[in-house]
Image (tube, rainbow, N blue to C red):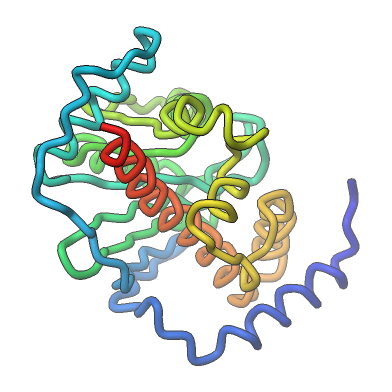
Length: 257
């Protein structure tokens, strides 16, 4: 579906006007080079870690799901150390599309650190991929639908750039947990449905995911920073929502254990 550029421009400008003075995140560092940005944020979202064991021995789920719940148990009982939530933004759903932005959210006790690598050109995507794989080596990775989308996408792009792809040693995709916990509660377990019903997050200052490829193309064509702000912000929303959804999954298990 072709969307008029003027319509996207109006939406982008409206969002940017409404978020003036917002304080839930703070940009602390920006590194900019030819063809790329590296941005660091401080996000006002604490870890909310509660120091008691999460014992899932009595859970009765199919083998694949049980394995994921055991990974969650391991994560909880290690106090969520070295955890990084991961999400990408691309120019399209096909793996032939470039990864434009990769983001990690690293929760700490009082706040969280978000880092984003933005590849403005195809050449700099190779740099982005090396950066992503380096983080895969350092952190326990948490995603929402990363098993189906984000990680296979990164792998395919590494292959196209003749880079060695290394799987994270620990990768927990919480979509599979959400499907089992809320399968009888919500008809859909899409991220937008879960965040509206469980986390009560309103994306009134965000754009739909379906518009991201159009906005990425507009940024590449025009090099207007307002588009970059919208893309970056959408990625941050996804990262924060995934972390908060982890809290909701943990809370549900603790209440029913």
